[in-house]
Length: 429
Ligand code: LLP
Image 1 (cartoon, rainbow, N blue to C red):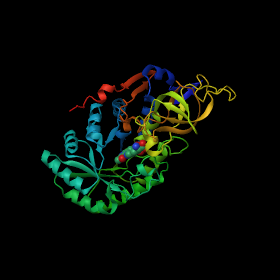
Image 2: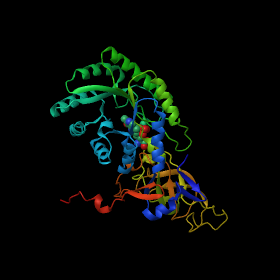
Image 3: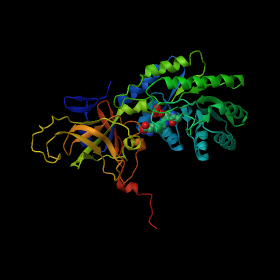
Image 4: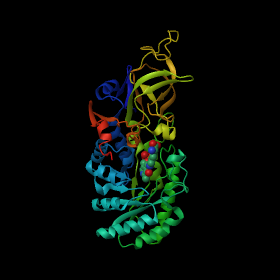
């Protein structure tokens, strides 16, 4: 089911026309559907309900306080990668004892913050980090609960920039070294070994790599048991993909079934860390066409959103569907052409949809068949994950507004940034 669909010729979120939201809140603007978010979470909870589990939403996918608050109320835990994300989770009403802390570069200050908050687990990624954590915990008179992130050396078959479980990646502890490091950890006075984790990559569209990784984790857990190290939980990371174009990712139920199958007969609690799958298709980015421009070889639709608002196309050559929020019949080809930029002419043309940023890489979509005119609003689909969270102020562009639609009402959950705020922390010397 899609929560964004055309009703007559109006693209709606639930039943609310996106054109109206663009008018009311301006563009560029992210719009999320609360039902889509909540249904996504419930789908996970339902799929894993046959065993003890914790769904730790990967905050980096979309750290909006309103979204974190929604997931917290639904019972979610959180996977964080910085002290900042921890503070967001706490500010949004999330429970610290459901937080796992991933990331290769945890600072002393971040460790202190997380120890004081008494998070569920530190997902440790190196021997050096483990030693530091033992020291920091000791200095606070605390015991740090830990899991080692093991690198199962499984090919996630996804974009190389978002593949994380191969030997050449910077993430996790080498599989062959993990057992010895666990033994060291178990002997450290301010460390308590509680789990094992892995995360092999993002936007996976098959279950087999997840199962392969789970099997390696289980085999290692069994070896640890021989050493007298008994784990309370296994955290199999995130990574379940979504449909952007024509991908056919597994359903959440299929994914859960595969993991539950791999874990059959085990007593450890299962943790998963989904990000994209919970929010990706629950949000769109609205953008207005400023100009149509006929280049020498291509037609351009210049829109008011850019790579600073949605970086995925520029960074990964990622595909996001682009739909007009009001669908018009194309004008007949024979009508007097005005360089593709005609006032209310909407010829069906092949467009490069690009932003105003001064980079050739600044595009939202290549080769899109659209019947549009300047002033029309477009919806960039599947923008709920790694959209706003990866945005920047490049070209001194204020970050977009964010709107949450809930039960027929639209709520501004983040105001558009003001130019003033962009240089508020600067000084001229
Ligand atoms: N757990 C860990 C340790 C992670 O590193 C990640 C994502 C997740 C969970 C959540 O993965 P998900 O379920 O969202 O696939 N910016 C890229 C994606 C980077 C993912 C980084 N790690 C993109 O826009 O495609």
